[in-house]
Amino acid sequence: MSASAELFAIATSGLSKRFDQLKALDALDLGVARGIIFGLLGPNGAGKSTAIKILTTLLDASAGSAQVAGFDVANEPVEVRRRIGYVPQLLSADGALTATENLNLSARLYGLRGAERVARVRDALTFAGLDEVADKLVRTYSGGMIRRLEIAQATLHGPEVLFLDEPTSGLDPVARHTVWDRLLELRRSRGMTILITTHDMEEADVLCDELAILHRGRLAAIGSPAALKAQVGPDADLEDVFAHFSGAVMDQGGRFRDIRESRGTLQRLG
Amino acid sequence: MRAYAIETAAVADAEVRKLMRDPTELMSRAVQPVLWLAIFGQVFSQVRGIPTGSLRYLDFMAPGILAQSILFSAIFYGISVIWERDLGIVHKILVTPAHRSALVLGKAIAAGLRGLVQAVVVYGVAVATDVDIQWTPAGVLTVVLAVVLGSCIFSTFSLVIACIVKTRERFMGIGQVLTMPLFFASNAIYPLDLMPGWLRTIALANPLTYLVDVLRGAMIVGGASVHAWTTSFAVLLGVFLALLALAAHLYPGLAR
Image (tube, rainbow over all chains, first blue to last red; front, side):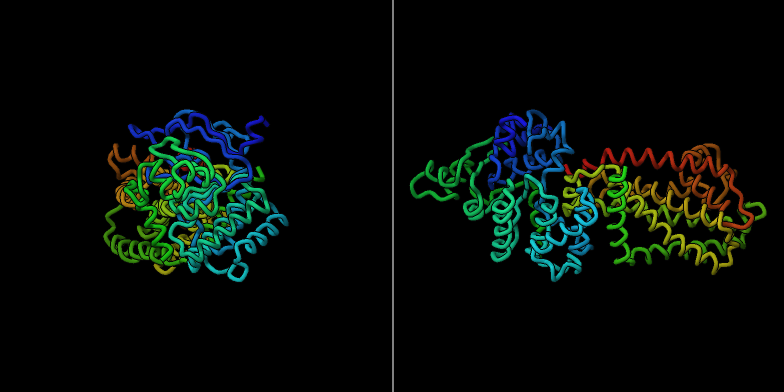
């Protein structure tokens, strides 16, 4: 393992993605230290989801390179997949299956076998606080329960890096806090590196050790929440930091598809 | 190899569980074969307008209706994949290290099992309409294999279309456009000999023709296959493997 791979769980160099004429990601250089919670902020269309899709091997970069857990996402995608977990923005647990069945499916696809699989699924249910409802269909769950299940699904194989795309989007404050608790627990007990994208400045402030602000596909700022606030002014909060570096305020614009997906998630949450 | 089999079985298992919990689609799909055999078949048996040799027309068309039932059911399988894409389920599955072709194969096998349920329905209607079913173990086993393989082919074809069009609206349009030509450009309800040359050429390139041909020889007393079963199964298997490879290549594109 190279020195940078030992230090960084995620490292990108000149990472770019172009969709026809649109530069979704423009020469992104990023290093995410191991064992921290890292937040990726930016207005809709800033390149957050594109970055996360490249880092999780779902999308090929147009140029540049990225290493996750010490492996190149373009040349060693299977090795990367073995070492990551991913919670998409959409509520991705299968509503027509129970929590146990959802977990068993993920466990088998991650190569967990026999007694180890049974034990991991049992532990994941406990971690998600779903023991009592493990055999009920997921479509009967609340949004917070589904998110906890998805985090358990994405971590039951013990990944080194966990990616979450707007994990608390559409959740009520109580459910949001339970999700935060789970993420902090994963960092504390397993030393997991966690990368989240979020629009929620409170979430970024409470959860993240370090933040990067993307603007039009480029890295506009990077640092701890406290350092970023200090750069903007003595009384600045993260909303001010966000507006300062991205030239935007929250809830401004967004592509049709982003909005459709967000609303789809909200609709599923009832 | 073991990992591949486990991944395939995991996907098939999840799909079958979902199917068992929501049998409404299976029930609604059962209506069509009932109409074809109980109404169309009964009437055309009286007309005697289509020469079917020593077979009654109803006996001749029963395997075609079974194949049609499989086709119509499997060809819309892709819409569930688009639904899974819209929900983010596809994204989550694609970040696992599982083989892409195992994910596709698992779905195809689940469609194959669904095809067997369709076959039971068609057999029930066929018995009720006095079709002369061949109940020999070899005949039934051949029908089972053909139904599973046929379902795998058309469901995987459907998945390929889903991967290309990516939206439900476009998929429904294309699905409607494809099913009828596939059905009518085959030997399902009339023999190849009756077709004009150009249509026969298309029919011979249509996997549904080979599926019907096997079913006709295996399912009906006195039914005869034009092609050797080994030839038909080789064609069906070849088409399935080609579609499987194509679908495995295109499937990751659903998450982009």
